[in-house]
Amino acid sequence: MPAPGHILIVCTGNICRSPMAEGLLRHALAGQPEPLKSLRVVSAGVAARTGEAISENAVIALKKGGVNISGMRSQALTQQLLDDALVVFGMTESHRALIQFKSLPVPKHLYLFREFLPAPAEREIGDPYGGPLKIYEACRDEMVEAIPGIISFLKNLLPAK
Image (cartoon, rainbow, N blue to C red):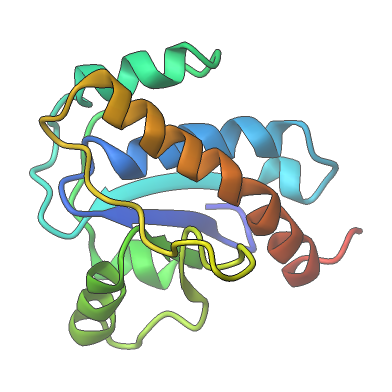
């Protein structure tokens, strides 16, 4: 694991939201200068079963934007993933609360994925699981909207070399 750690994105089952956010953020960081370009992005779920395929609609929604997440598989959130993370992003307040309750130590940098958007933007990203493609596309768009704020935050967290 390269220092300074990875970016960890957390949702419930790690088959819809967090893999979508992982793919989108990884894609966005690839176009940034170092050290952002080299940051590793991973995702996990608070109630995930390791090895599950990513939701078909999640794959389709991202493929429309040129991001391929079809090879990803789910993984359960572990204390080691939290300990090794530079920053952790949850999709909802319940994800953040569960991480705070179950982890020791609690990650220093624990935020919602949409936390850096100006008010009155909705901070939580709802679960599209089982919904039609348009719900996944709306979820994707909510994530895309949040990425510039996350990149600005990361630039401040990791000053350029």
